[in-house]
Amino acid sequence: MTTQTAEATPAAVLATTKQAGEIRARWAWVEPSVWTARMLMALEEGVKGGKWFSLMDKVYRLRTLEVAFAQVKANNGAAGVDHQSVAHFERDLRTNLDHLSEHLQAGTYRPQAVRRVWIPKPGSREKRPLGVPTVRDRVVQAAVRLVVEPICERDFAAHSYGFRPARGCKDALRRVDALLKQGNTWIVDADLKSYFDTIPHAPLLERLREKIADGAVLSVVEAFLHQAVRDGLRSWTPEGGTPQGAGLSPLLANLYLDPLDHQMAQDGIEMVRYADDFVLLCRSRAEAEQALARVR
Image (tube, rainbow, N blue to C red; front, side):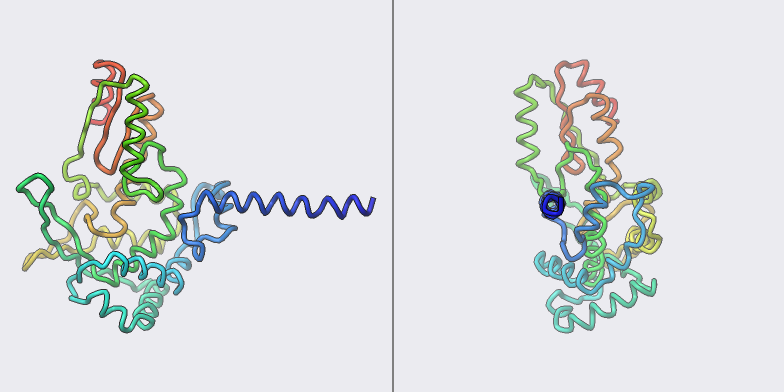
Protein backbone atom coordinates (compact mmCIF):
# COMPACT_ATOMS: atom_id res chain seq x y z
CA MET A 1 0.00 0.00 0.00
CA THR A 2 2.83 2.40 0.87
CA THR A 3 4.52 1.83 -2.49
CA GLN A 4 1.30 2.41 -4.44
CA THR A 5 0.64 5.71 -2.62
CA ALA A 6 4.18 6.93 -3.25
CA GLU A 7 3.86 6.12 -6.96
CA ALA A 8 0.51 7.87 -7.27
CA THR A 9 1.71 11.21 -5.89
CA PRO A 10 4.27 12.05 -8.62
CA ALA A 11 1.73 11.19 -11.32
CA ALA A 12 -0.67 13.84 -10.01
CA VAL A 13 2.11 16.46 -9.91
CA LEU A 14 3.10 15.68 -13.49
CA ALA A 15 -0.51 16.08 -14.65
CA THR A 16 -0.73 19.49 -12.99
CA THR A 17 2.60 20.56 -14.46
CA LYS A 18 1.47 19.53 -17.93
CA GLN A 19 -1.75 21.51 -17.52
CA ALA A 20 0.16 24.60 -16.43
CA GLY A 21 2.53 24.17 -19.36
CA GLU A 22 -0.37 23.92 -21.79
CA ILE A 23 -1.91 27.11 -20.42
CA ARG A 24 1.39 28.97 -20.70
CA ALA A 25 1.73 27.76 -24.30
CA ARG A 26 -1.74 29.07 -25.16
CA TRP A 27 -0.77 32.46 -23.74
CA ALA A 28 2.81 32.47 -25.00
CA TRP A 29 2.57 36.12 -26.13
CA VAL A 30 1.82 37.55 -22.67
CA GLU A 31 4.59 39.05 -20.54
CA PRO A 32 5.61 36.33 -18.03
CA SER A 33 6.89 38.82 -15.46
CA VAL A 34 3.36 40.29 -15.31
CA TRP A 35 1.22 37.21 -15.92
CA THR A 36 2.32 34.49 -13.54
CA ALA A 37 1.20 30.88 -13.83
CA ARG A 38 -1.36 31.47 -11.10
CA MET A 39 -2.81 34.51 -12.89
CA LEU A 40 -2.98 32.61 -16.18
CA MET A 41 -4.87 29.81 -14.44
CA ALA A 42 -7.38 32.37 -13.17
CA LEU A 43 -7.59 33.84 -16.67
CA GLU A 44 -8.44 30.42 -18.11
CA GLU A 45 -10.94 29.43 -15.44
CA GLY A 46 -12.50 32.88 -14.96
CA VAL A 47 -12.38 35.05 -11.86
CA LYS A 48 -15.20 35.37 -9.33
CA GLY A 49 -17.85 37.76 -10.57
CA GLY A 50 -16.12 38.00 -13.94
CA LYS A 51 -14.15 41.10 -12.91
CA TRP A 52 -10.49 41.60 -12.10
CA PHE A 53 -9.41 43.52 -9.01
CA SER A 54 -5.98 44.69 -7.79
CA LEU A 55 -4.28 45.25 -11.13
CA MET A 56 -2.59 48.62 -10.61
CA ASP A 57 0.24 47.07 -8.58
CA LYS A 58 1.13 45.09 -11.71
CA VAL A 59 1.11 48.29 -13.80
CA TYR A 60 3.41 50.38 -11.58
CA ARG A 61 5.81 47.51 -10.87
CA LEU A 62 9.28 48.53 -12.12
CA ARG A 63 9.70 45.33 -14.13
CA THR A 64 6.46 46.04 -16.00
CA LEU A 65 7.57 49.59 -16.75
CA GLU A 66 10.95 48.31 -17.97
CA VAL A 67 9.27 45.92 -20.41
CA ALA A 68 6.91 48.71 -21.47
CA PHE A 69 9.82 51.04 -22.20
CA ALA A 70 11.54 48.33 -24.25
CA GLN A 71 8.41 48.14 -26.42
CA VAL A 72 8.30 51.92 -26.80
CA LYS A 73 11.99 52.00 -27.71
CA ALA A 74 11.49 49.25 -30.32
CA ASN A 75 8.83 51.37 -32.04
CA ASN A 76 11.25 54.34 -32.15
CA GLY A 77 8.50 56.96 -32.36
CA ALA A 78 8.77 60.73 -32.45
CA ALA A 79 8.82 63.07 -29.46
CA GLY A 80 5.58 64.41 -28.00
CA VAL A 81 4.63 67.90 -26.86
CA ASP A 82 7.50 67.96 -24.33
CA HIS A 83 10.05 67.42 -27.16
CA GLN A 84 11.63 64.54 -25.21
CA SER A 85 12.90 61.77 -27.48
CA VAL A 86 13.11 58.10 -26.59
CA ALA A 87 16.91 58.41 -26.42
CA HIS A 88 16.66 61.36 -24.03
CA PHE A 89 14.21 59.48 -21.79
CA GLU A 90 16.57 56.50 -21.74
CA ARG A 91 19.56 58.56 -20.57
CA ASP A 92 18.04 58.68 -17.10
CA LEU A 93 15.83 55.64 -17.45
CA ARG A 94 15.78 54.34 -13.88
CA THR A 95 14.94 57.76 -12.42
CA ASN A 96 12.21 58.33 -15.01
CA LEU A 97 10.67 54.91 -14.39
CA ASP A 98 10.92 55.39 -10.62
CA HIS A 99 9.00 58.68 -10.94
CA LEU A 100 6.32 57.06 -13.09
CA SER A 101 5.97 54.20 -10.63
CA GLU A 102 5.65 56.58 -7.69
CA HIS A 103 3.00 58.73 -9.40
CA LEU A 104 0.99 55.70 -10.54
CA GLN A 105 1.11 54.19 -7.06
CA ALA A 106 0.08 57.48 -5.41
CA GLY A 107 -2.68 58.16 -7.94
CA THR A 108 -1.06 61.46 -9.00
CA TYR A 109 -0.09 60.47 -12.54
CA ARG A 110 -1.57 62.75 -15.22
CA PRO A 111 -0.94 62.32 -18.95
CA GLN A 112 0.29 65.25 -21.00
CA ALA A 113 -1.32 66.51 -24.20
CA VAL A 114 -1.12 64.48 -27.41
CA ARG A 115 0.70 66.11 -30.31
CA ARG A 116 -1.36 65.85 -33.48
CA VAL A 117 0.35 65.30 -36.82
CA TRP A 118 -1.17 64.68 -40.23
CA ILE A 119 0.01 61.85 -42.45
CA PRO A 120 -1.02 61.00 -46.04
CA LYS A 121 -3.76 58.44 -46.64
CA PRO A 122 -2.58 55.64 -48.96
CA GLY A 123 -4.04 56.08 -52.44
CA SER A 124 -5.58 59.46 -51.61
CA ARG A 125 -4.73 63.15 -51.44
CA GLU A 126 -6.38 63.33 -48.05
CA LYS A 127 -4.52 63.16 -44.77
CA ARG A 128 -5.47 61.45 -41.54
CA PRO A 129 -4.70 62.58 -37.99
CA LEU A 130 -2.17 60.74 -35.88
CA GLY A 131 -1.74 61.33 -32.16
CA VAL A 132 1.78 61.32 -30.70
CA PRO A 133 1.80 60.98 -26.88
CA THR A 134 4.92 61.85 -24.91
CA VAL A 135 7.42 59.06 -24.28
CA ARG A 136 6.46 58.88 -20.59
CA ASP A 137 2.80 58.48 -21.53
CA ARG A 138 3.61 55.84 -24.14
CA VAL A 139 5.44 53.87 -21.46
CA VAL A 140 2.43 54.00 -19.12
CA GLN A 141 0.04 53.03 -21.91
CA ALA A 142 2.27 50.08 -22.81
CA ALA A 143 2.35 49.02 -19.14
CA VAL A 144 -1.43 49.19 -18.86
CA ARG A 145 -1.76 47.18 -22.04
CA LEU A 146 0.62 44.49 -20.76
CA VAL A 147 -1.72 43.99 -17.80
CA VAL A 148 -5.15 44.53 -19.38
CA GLU A 149 -4.86 43.04 -22.87
CA PRO A 150 -5.00 39.34 -21.86
CA ILE A 151 -8.20 40.02 -19.88
CA CYS A 152 -9.84 41.48 -22.98
CA GLU A 153 -8.34 38.91 -25.36
CA ARG A 154 -9.85 36.05 -23.39
CA ASP A 155 -13.33 36.94 -24.65
CA PHE A 156 -12.68 38.53 -28.05
CA ALA A 157 -14.46 36.95 -31.02
CA ALA A 158 -12.56 34.60 -33.30
CA HIS A 159 -13.34 36.56 -36.49
CA SER A 160 -11.59 39.74 -35.26
CA TYR A 161 -8.02 40.02 -36.58
CA GLY A 162 -6.84 43.64 -36.47
CA PHE A 163 -4.27 44.75 -33.86
CA ARG A 164 -4.42 41.46 -31.99
CA PRO A 165 -1.48 39.39 -30.72
CA ALA A 166 -0.51 36.34 -32.78
CA ARG A 167 -2.94 37.44 -35.52
CA GLY A 168 -2.59 39.56 -38.61
CA CYS A 169 -3.71 40.47 -42.10
CA LYS A 170 -2.64 37.13 -43.61
CA ASP A 171 -4.74 35.25 -41.06
CA ALA A 172 -7.75 37.37 -42.01
CA LEU A 173 -7.17 36.71 -45.72
CA ARG A 174 -6.92 32.96 -45.10
CA ARG A 175 -10.26 33.07 -43.31
CA VAL A 176 -11.84 35.01 -46.20
CA ASP A 177 -10.47 32.45 -48.68
CA ALA A 178 -11.90 29.56 -46.64
CA LEU A 179 -15.35 31.17 -46.49
CA LEU A 180 -15.33 31.82 -50.24
CA LYS A 181 -14.56 28.16 -50.89
CA GLN A 182 -17.51 27.23 -48.66
CA GLY A 183 -19.86 29.09 -51.02
CA ASN A 184 -20.10 32.48 -49.31
CA THR A 185 -19.63 34.42 -52.55
CA TRP A 186 -21.77 37.49 -51.84
CA ILE A 187 -19.39 39.98 -50.25
CA VAL A 188 -20.06 43.24 -48.42
CA ASP A 189 -17.04 45.37 -47.55
CA ALA A 190 -17.89 48.00 -44.93
CA ASP A 191 -15.52 50.56 -43.43
CA LEU A 192 -16.34 52.71 -40.39
CA LYS A 193 -15.43 56.29 -41.26
CA SER A 194 -13.18 58.05 -38.70
CA TYR A 195 -13.81 55.20 -36.27
CA PHE A 196 -10.97 55.86 -33.83
CA ASP A 197 -11.90 59.55 -33.54
CA THR A 198 -15.61 58.91 -32.92
CA ILE A 199 -15.74 56.11 -30.32
CA PRO A 200 -18.04 57.36 -27.53
CA HIS A 201 -16.24 57.39 -24.19
CA ALA A 202 -19.07 56.41 -21.85
CA PRO A 203 -20.02 53.05 -23.43
CA LEU A 204 -16.34 52.26 -24.06
CA LEU A 205 -15.52 52.70 -20.38
CA GLU A 206 -18.58 50.65 -19.48
CA ARG A 207 -17.25 47.77 -21.61
CA LEU A 208 -13.99 48.01 -19.63
CA ARG A 209 -15.82 48.09 -16.28
CA GLU A 210 -17.53 44.83 -17.21
CA LYS A 211 -14.10 43.17 -17.03
CA ILE A 212 -12.08 45.30 -14.59
CA ALA A 213 -13.06 46.60 -11.16
CA ASP A 214 -9.73 48.26 -10.26
CA GLY A 215 -10.63 51.94 -9.98
CA ALA A 216 -7.02 53.09 -10.28
CA VAL A 217 -6.56 51.36 -13.65
CA LEU A 218 -9.92 52.62 -14.90
CA SER A 219 -8.99 56.17 -13.88
CA VAL A 220 -5.73 56.04 -15.83
CA VAL A 221 -7.51 54.77 -18.96
CA GLU A 222 -10.15 57.48 -18.60
CA ALA A 223 -7.42 60.10 -18.20
CA PHE A 224 -5.91 58.99 -21.51
CA LEU A 225 -9.29 59.32 -23.24
CA HIS A 226 -9.67 62.86 -21.92
CA GLN A 227 -6.13 64.11 -22.44
CA ALA A 228 -5.82 67.30 -24.48
CA VAL A 229 -4.87 67.32 -28.17
CA ARG A 230 -2.45 69.95 -29.46
CA ASP A 231 -2.32 70.78 -33.16
CA GLY A 232 0.11 73.65 -33.72
CA LEU A 233 -1.19 76.57 -31.65
CA ARG A 234 -4.62 74.98 -31.17
CA SER A 235 -5.44 72.82 -28.16
CA TRP A 236 -8.69 71.14 -27.10
CA THR A 237 -10.04 68.26 -25.05
CA PRO A 238 -11.86 65.66 -27.19
CA GLU A 239 -15.36 64.58 -26.20
CA GLY A 240 -14.99 61.21 -27.92
CA GLY A 241 -12.53 58.95 -29.65
CA THR A 242 -9.13 57.51 -28.84
CA PRO A 243 -6.20 58.84 -30.89
CA GLN A 244 -4.60 56.70 -33.56
CA GLY A 245 -0.96 56.39 -32.61
CA ALA A 246 -1.58 55.86 -28.89
CA GLY A 247 -0.58 52.45 -27.56
CA LEU A 248 -3.93 51.67 -25.91
CA SER A 249 -6.10 52.79 -28.82
CA PRO A 250 -6.13 49.55 -30.85
CA LEU A 251 -7.11 47.48 -27.81
CA LEU A 252 -9.86 49.93 -26.83
CA ALA A 253 -11.13 50.06 -30.42
CA ASN A 254 -11.47 46.26 -30.48
CA LEU A 255 -13.10 46.26 -27.06
CA TYR A 256 -15.82 48.68 -28.17
CA LEU A 257 -16.75 46.57 -31.22
CA ASP A 258 -16.59 43.23 -29.40
CA PRO A 259 -20.35 43.04 -28.59
CA LEU A 260 -21.12 43.54 -32.30
CA ASP A 261 -18.64 40.79 -33.19
CA HIS A 262 -20.39 38.33 -30.90
CA GLN A 263 -23.87 39.39 -32.01
CA MET A 264 -22.99 38.79 -35.66
CA ALA A 265 -21.64 35.33 -34.78
CA GLN A 266 -24.80 34.50 -32.82
CA ASP A 267 -26.90 35.56 -35.83
CA GLY A 268 -24.95 33.15 -38.04
CA ILE A 269 -23.39 35.91 -40.17
CA GLU A 270 -19.92 35.07 -41.43
CA MET A 271 -17.73 38.12 -40.91
CA VAL A 272 -14.04 38.92 -40.92
CA ARG A 273 -13.17 42.16 -39.14
CA TYR A 274 -9.81 43.88 -39.35
CA ALA A 275 -9.95 46.90 -37.02
CA ASP A 276 -12.65 49.18 -38.53
CA ASP A 277 -12.96 47.24 -41.79
CA PHE A 278 -15.71 44.59 -42.01
CA VAL A 279 -15.95 41.91 -44.69
CA LEU A 280 -19.30 40.09 -44.62
CA LEU A 281 -19.44 36.86 -46.63
CA CYS A 282 -22.90 35.55 -47.46
CA ARG A 283 -24.57 32.90 -49.64
CA SER A 284 -27.17 35.15 -51.26
CA ARG A 285 -27.95 38.79 -51.97
CA ALA A 286 -30.80 38.79 -49.45
CA GLU A 287 -28.50 37.45 -46.77
CA ALA A 288 -25.90 40.10 -47.65
CA GLU A 289 -28.45 42.91 -47.38
CA GLN A 290 -29.61 41.64 -43.98
CA ALA A 291 -26.01 41.40 -42.76
CA LEU A 292 -25.24 44.93 -43.89
CA ALA A 293 -28.33 46.22 -42.10
CA ARG A 294 -27.06 44.68 -38.84
CA VAL A 295 -23.72 46.48 -39.13
CA ARG A 296 -25.47 49.79 -39.73
